Image (cartoon, rainbow, N blue to C red):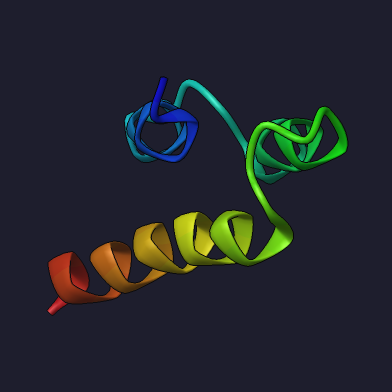
Length: 51
């Protein structure tokens, strides 16, 4: 299973927050780097939609 894609989808849709994303790092389903990328992807998406 592609955990990064699944978590990222839920995070971008607003189902998960940053704490939820970090839980997947703790469970070793994704790496910290992947979690950082997921969080950054929403931030960059939010910034582009604000323009």
